[in-house]
Image (cartoon, rainbow, N blue to C red; front, side, top):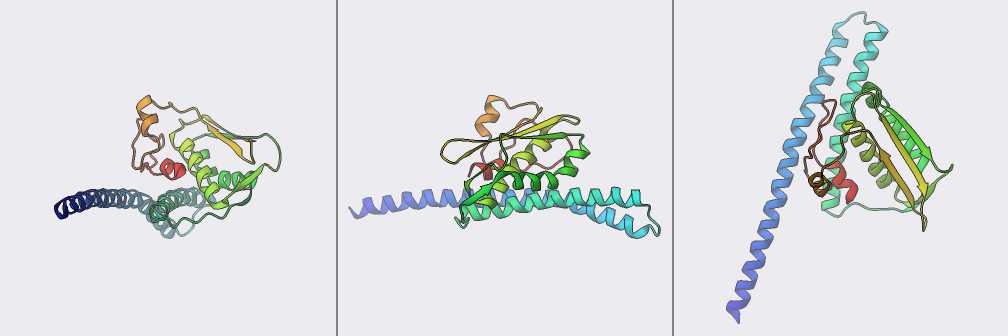
Length: 223
């Protein structure tokens, strides 16, 4: 009996060690990805800031162009850091939800303002179709913002230049909202659909404007 208990304990320890090793590998992978992806936008920010400092009399057009590049790169860094924080909170079960009345329109307005330059730089036109004014449901506002943010970010990231993105929202049953984002990207294969919400999954479609892709945005959405 003691031998059986020992074997059972050793088996559990082996399983626990395998899980721990997998988590360590995933965290190391993400840190490698984050470090690599943060390096590029940081270099862009530093480079354009240097150019602004070296020009004693920059034109308003030059300042605007360089400022836009700095802002775009800063937004890329913010996206990476937001996902880093989210994965930590979700895996440590420290993500606290505070459900309350959550209006959809103000969230959409803020997200569209945040991604306005990214969409404009690729000639992407975004339309919003709300079934009615003041659509709202019971949810955590921060989590809802992050979900919609990731969906629209992906749509912009994988859409070809000079295309359209259509966002719709309508009231569903039992105080829910049905939200959809439709773009003109290449679509997903059957295998891509199977891997869609997996952590660190790299799908067949590639970002169309050289944006970074670390395979965490939709995993966070699904969680």
